[in-house]
Amino acid sequence: MDFLIHPGYPAGMARVKGSRNADYAQERERLLTAVRQRLLARDGAQASFRELAEVAGVSVATLRHYFGSREALMAEMMADMHRRGLPHLLSVATGARGPVRESLQWFLRAFAKGWREGAVGEVHAFGLTAGVGHATLGPVYLQELLEPTLQAAEARLSRHIAEGELRRCDVRHAALELVSPVVLGLLHQVQLSGASSRPLDVERFLEDHLDTFLRAHAATPPG
Image (cartoon, rainbow, N blue to C red; front, side, top):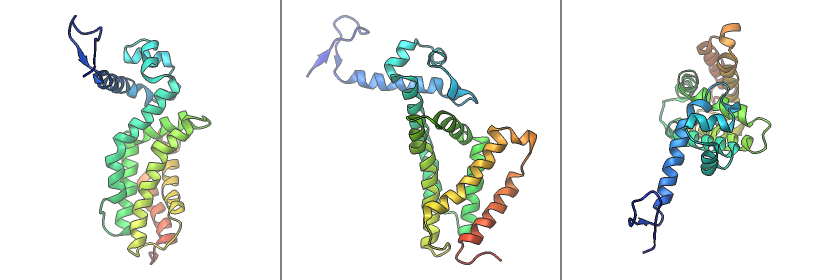
């Protein structure tokens, strides 16, 4: 078996080749955890590489060793956010929530609650701020955060179409119809501080939006 001598080990102690990779991955994860809160702050997408290194308690050279560049670090943060959100996305896509109105009502309320009380809003605000107009980070945000959200909604809608509760349609278009107004409303209220300048009754908005969506898509539109 191949062995390497590691400078951090006592003299004469050998380390199995490949164990550096595990140490490397663990330190990379530690650094991601250390900078997460800073990146999810309102101005997090503007944080410099030097500032992120300071937050993590390492030198710029060390942070560059593990991530290569500021853009690569931010892209990895989006991928990490995707991994952390997978259990919720799976529930959104496949969880049994009753008939179509009850199901979509649960989806919209859960999305709004996660946005306002959890990290969903911070995650999407970070991705949008970092990604809009950026040739590299824009597609990363789309792939890691926005599209998984839309595809989870598509999966839920597809089930109700298959069960005959919703009319057959382009399910991708329907998911955009369902999700987009809610994202805009929540951005307006939370990240853009609309709650203080022009407050919106979000719960009532969600109910009105769902009524409109079902009038257009329900196999038997509500009376």
